Image 1 (cartoon, rainbow, N blue to C red):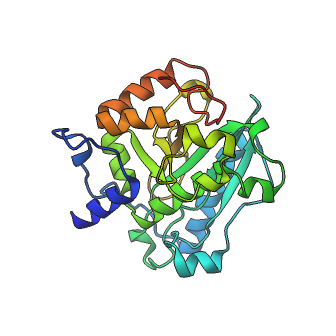
Image 2 (cartoon, rainbow, N blue to C red):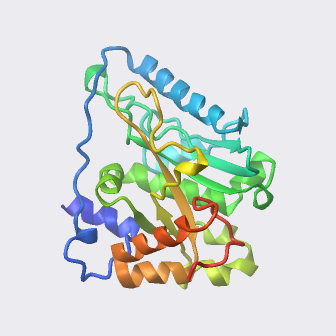
Amino acid sequence: MKAVNRFVSFFRCCTNGNEPNGDQYLQPLNLFNPRSGVSVEDLVEQSSAAREKLWSSLGTLEPFALSQNLSAAAATGPKWPALQQSFRLIHRPNGSVLLVSDGLSDPFDDVQESGGNVNGYSLEFFIETPASELGTSPADVKASWQFQLLFTVSQLAAGHGSIRSIIDDMELLSTEAEGVAEAVPEAARGAHVNRAGRVGALLGLHDHSMGIPAFIPNMPLTDVRLVNIKLISLAELKLITDRGAHGRRRLAELFAAQPGALVSSLERPSVL
């Protein structure tokens, strides 16, 4: 339970402390049904191929991968399952762009008995944003608040590996993410950056009309959930802070009533 409490302290699930079950109902990860006897290297290749097939089906996949400095990440950050800390960029037919994590669902490279391995943390994250709000070069993309938010949440998930089971139990999570504020243009900080220098995000929204599946097909070991990250305003974050799980559900309802429910944009008016 101490480990779960540490996880919540990082993800700041914004409970009001009075919910009888809500945010207190956190269970350890228990979704593994490993089903393989092939080498770890082959499993990593199969997992990467399954993800790339999905990414390519969602739009035009850029050939380059975005990554942070792997040697620095290995020394100071959480370990990704196969040490492939990567992100991809997809241009959607509707004019938006997807940034996706690409490696959280790799099999663990230090599990030599492949029959006991799993698809990493059994999830990948994505942010959808208008193309007009994102630069075109890899350097511009990596400097964007969208990439920094995706990177921060991915790192938190890698460091606290039970997030998949928590999302399965609770459906929606929220976080106040550090390390993103400096990438937010100064004109937008008043509506999105709190006094602690964090931005709010809602994790786990669904919109089947957008053609983005809830799971990545054909992963070789265990099922892998594709989890949306949506930037929220300070007013929307306050609703979660005040009302916890009920506030998250209410925001999900309000977002679902608008077009582009999954899209993150600094130009989006608050739903409150």
